[in-house]
Image (cartoon, rainbow, N blue to C red):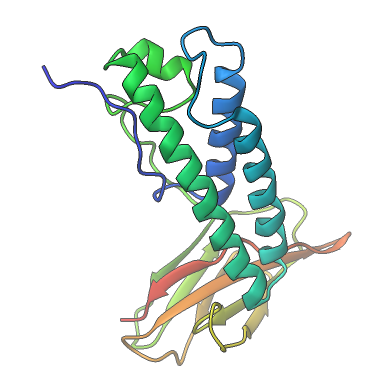
Length: 202
């Protein structure tokens, strides 16, 4: 029988979900007799998760520097979580119940289907990308932006404003990778930018 392991790959989940996972492991491992001497102090994970949350919120407001800092903060938390996951795997020796009691996911669990609030898909014509966001009750209109390289020298370009949750961006360069984001405007004003979605233009 294949041994059950702790899932070490966190790249498939969003920043917000990753922060939630990190905090859940802290909650589950606090006072847990199965894990008396974790390799990483729980307080260190808590602090790192809070830093990532702050950097994530700052990145949603735009700016290449803020986005770069968010990625750096995510890597720091991933390093800590991977080290902690290896500790859990060593202690549990394949015991799935013990693994789950730590807050981590096991290899026996199917990965949840990712249905992001915001997505981008190839359009019908060359150089087109169709961006879409899940409906928000308070939204009256949507602001759409794209960027060729948010971590480099490129700036965010406003593609348009619409009253629909779907928008087609035209005239993009084929074979080039772009980042897309949006925000909505409601009675209280404009929301923060959503987490960027990267897509290669076909």
